[in-house]
Image 1 (spheres, chains in turn blue, cyan):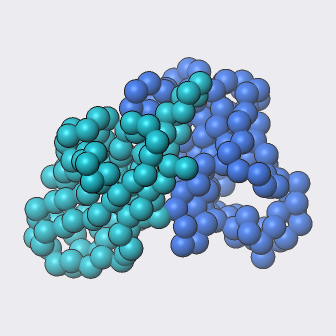
Image 2 (tube, chains in turn purple, red; image 1 turned 90 degrees about the vertical axis):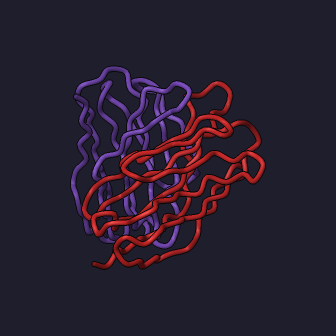
Image 3 (cartoon, chains in turn red, cyan; image 1 turned 180 degrees about the vertical axis):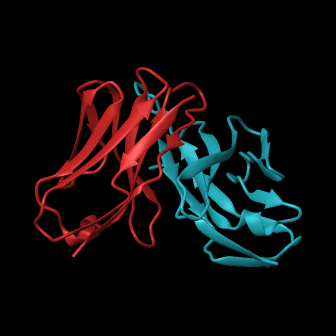
Length: 113
Length: 115
């Protein structure tokens, strides 16, 4: 069966520090991978999606970036965090198709102070 | 652009009460519609889905019908349980040309069920 892992579960970082969140998927190949963010009082917002190794599409201009160095690995990064980067970050995978069902990881709670 | 609007929470109900969480959408094409649930301390899980007008999705006693004429996908359950306490997200898949499709979510509605 397929599983998706995210770490860390929680993170507290100072403003201006770098960020690296990792997501890995097991039990499937060539998945579509997604990063979402839920800021306080707002809905989930798609940040990046990837349909293959090295292929990244950005939905929202920001100081975050994403990379996909391996088929089932998706990394969210920042060189300098802002206060507004605080939120709940979710990684998801899917295989595409008509219904586009996506499966989500447990999430990372990021607090920038 | 495409968007999803769902009722503000929190919603507090007694066990065995009826539940309705309203969800409406705007979309230029023919989206698929979803309800996701996030139980305390867990990640999002797909609860149910509908891919075309008049389809009814159902799971765990929850139902939602894809209404194109009213652009709605309200979540309903006849008798809630304490274990249904969670945050519920309505979502649509925009399926733009040339992509695999991406989910657009509402803000979420927190449901608390009291014994």
